[in-house]
Image (cartoon, one colour):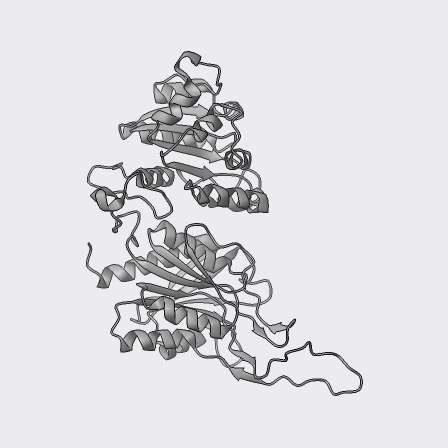
Length: 439
């Protein structure tokens, strides 16, 4: 396969030499196009030695071959690593001020994969997120960066994924076999060159890197808001970060993902179906409807246990001549428990995962309350975390314990919310493999 490997100007460029070696050892023909800044981290001689091809970043070299057009036309796959904030911005806005950006514009029907790497603040900046969403909307596969130690003393999301991870994702995107006997399939947010029905190699089905391929996963995220009057509501501190991370992890595992989005402080990821809800009753209706054709349901949203019994049609005013209002609450339905009851009544083959945000008190510890909740709700898995001020809600990290209805040993997972999401999706895949025969 003819691959163009673009290298952005970040310190993580040194890791890309290992990625290039993986491509060439798998038998692929690789042309490397570093940006000018990238050559300050890894020199041209290194790329030429490892690829076996001349390397340039100028549109004025090999003009007789119309290089800036030819490379994009001939490439069967384009991989960019590291994709810096600057490079993502230039690609999203269609700039063509060097050989790499020209080649990206000429990609045509070739699949494009970009592996970002930058500091956390740069990755999370609204401008970068908007550029990523733009690229994904055009069919470019942009990986989520890894989380961990960055260039300085700080840590967080922004590390370049490991070369092996990028390699596997690239082979999956191209529908090629990186290792003899191992199958890699086109992920759901890629645009296949042919109709999958006409090409058995592109039919969605489980593979080692995409264990949820062919399955529909519904995930709820964020916090519900229960109106008190036209301007006020009862709510909670949920940001939606964990639910969004789960949606990304499920999408990367090959699933068709449906996100039931209550109030969230982060945007929904590309490549998933989004159903917006506000109240617990709206979420209940959406969840019961979505569950009807879902293989997996993950209820990660923070759902209000109570709602005001009466909702004022006008703003409740603070007045000296009347008594302060007394707000009466009524209990909201238990959506998770109802989903389990409906599934069991219909004898549906479906995995249901609940989330429990708990606090301990004088009567019991967090896990004691969680285990009682698992018995009461009878879902298959319950992901438990201890919440509180400056803990879990709105944070970028999480620490959870995954409990199973079967009574298997509790599983701990911690780190970034992406790390926790990956652990939950891995556990979901493992649970499904015990009851669902391979395709």
